[in-house]
Image (tube, rainbow, N blue to C red):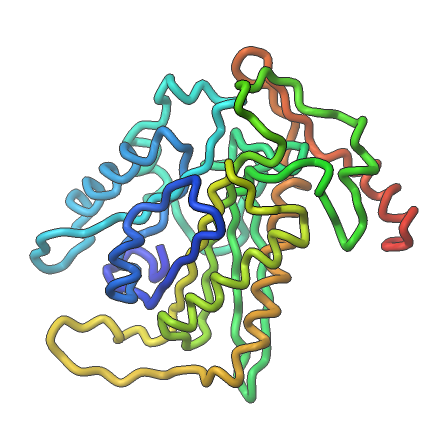
Length: 310
């Protein structure tokens, strides 16, 4: 909910590193430059029910203060079918409504929560993670916030602070599941949402999303064929930008001043992925499949071995 429970669209854009996934509503974002709805993230088989639930929530809450003909809810997904009974279709409209009604600012839960509940990442339990950075540009401070639903990557590529943690722990707490014959290590997905109060226009937000793969790659993502790596960014600046008939004046950050935001974006997505894994807990799901939590003590020992921590 970029501006809370009000219909006040924000400038936005999106990017796909590898498109084996779904994020609805993006063609209109490309065309219009605006995000007009909340962003919802769920599992692969629940995109439809969540999208419809958002529309019904609009109607019952009076989201639109004027008559409207159409809208395209933004709903993204990653696949949790190794742990979740995904063909049981357990996500209902009421779950989406509860998420919308309870959304608030402040500290967020991470790990096995929301759409991230059944996700796996880089050889361990994955899930939902967040991170942010504050950058100073001229005399103004701007925040870059990142939320990930992290469900990607092979263990052998898992890296923290340049340390090959996955290789060091390659024989530790491996997944226990029966994979289909077509499964390859690294298959999965990651959804990333970037929010900023910097005055960026849609073409600049596209540039922000195009930097997200750098952070994903630092941790171990490779944009594998079986991965849906889809990213969206929006700016809460220019609150009066969305007009149907009236002209408006806009603030815009010059392109020559945008580099600190690129750096903040890369750092924040890297940290958000790690935070998701640090917060996640071991989970046993359908058919006895199991994904183990990242072993904190073992990771610290590896980082000490490479002189990253004391």
